[in-house]
Amino acid sequence: METVTHFESLRPLWAVLVSLLAIPLILLSGERRPNLRESWTLLAAFVKAGLVWSLLPDVLDGRVAVTSLGTIVPGVELALRVDTLGLVFGLVASTLWVLTSFYSIGYVRGAGEHKQTRYFASFALCLSSTIGIAFAANLVTFLIFFELLSLATYPLVIHKETPKAIDAARKYLSYVLPAGLMLVLAIVMTATISSQQGLDFVPGGFLERTDASAPLLRWLFLFYILGVGVKAGIMPLHSWLPAAMAAPTPVSALLHAVAVVKAGVFGVLRVTGYVFGPELLQEIGVWTALAWAAGITLTVASLLAMRQDNLKRRLAYSTVGHLSYIVLGAALLSLASWKGAILHLIFHATMKITLFFCAGAIYVRTHRENISEMVGIGRQMPVTMAAFAIGSLGLAGVPGINGWISKWNLAAGTLQADEPVFLMLLVLSGVLNAAYFFPIVHQAFFRSSDEYPRFGEASPLMVVPLALTAVVSLVLGLVPNLGAHAWDLASKAAVAVIGGGS
Image (tube, rainbow, N blue to C red):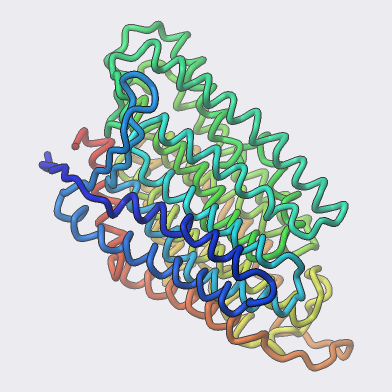
């Protein structure tokens, strides 16, 4: 068992606060000084990423940074703690926010978006909330940032203020607010029945120590899954996600790759691995229900994706399916499945943000959103569509791109858990992924159309980020431990939960 050392540090707090402190500066710069406004955005993004990355050596050495901000309810502190799983999510969110910030500048200028100051301020608030979720030391701290993220995302979903965007934002709130109430109920119940007074996350779970009855624990687990499962897109809690595609494309990238839905699956990992734990989940038998919910979701979402002509909606249903890869890995409770789930949290982010960046670049240059209107576009936007091809191949599980590594571990996890039926569902989903992605790439490069004017690539502020995320997906498919030590972090977190480490 690895020895873990806790030490006091303000870096987790500053990682949360830096984008929060940038908000008044962004608002004061306003529409009249866009360059200054965007400079504050970029500065906050770089500083946040630097703070999070500075914690990587400590976590790899078994050192956990802790920040305590005082008691918020009797026996429970408002506290931040950077454990292995939290750092994984923090690295993903903070690093991709840097690229999304550059991309957003190119997008809002190229698309002529209105209320750009509100857009950048809301983005900053979302990232503060996301890092707070990643570094939350206990359930109450997690709840505060989880609900703050729900509210901070609303102005981004409604940003265009069209009837479609307004309806999407209302639908979003109609899902996430009741889910928040379920999460509050679950945490109150946990505080009532648990001997863990601080409600701190513990690898392997802390509810194993309770004397509560199995039926009560099953209800408690259901309330938790309803609370975090909306953001995780588990069917039938998913329909807000395709509707939210009315938002600008960088917001879609935020929703699907960086913050909101990743907060949902991160919440599933916290609940299954750090609140209930493998032994209790097996004892009360709820893991099978969660695994089947994920297996059905990843299959049905893939079938629905094939029916979508709108590119962003097809990507949205793809996200619903791939989130359930992570949920399935968490539910199967094997070492390989947990490692695959954590790796897919990282690798899906780089691939899916690439695809949404490509969709936004296409829209800014062509104002076309439907796949049927994109015949031959690969010849006019070769860098964009080459990046799209890389992301598509990776999500389908083609070797050489990072998606195949996480999928391979998830597949191995189904066999470790002695559940080959879920292996068949994973294989079927991979085939369906190819069926709804590969025709887009084929018609982009291997079919021609005389209907197009000459478009060319979008702004470098948009093309460079999507090219970088595509290259990262390629490199991590060959050397998964390069840079952020994704393989090591996933292994450490999986062993801590499944192997009973600290």
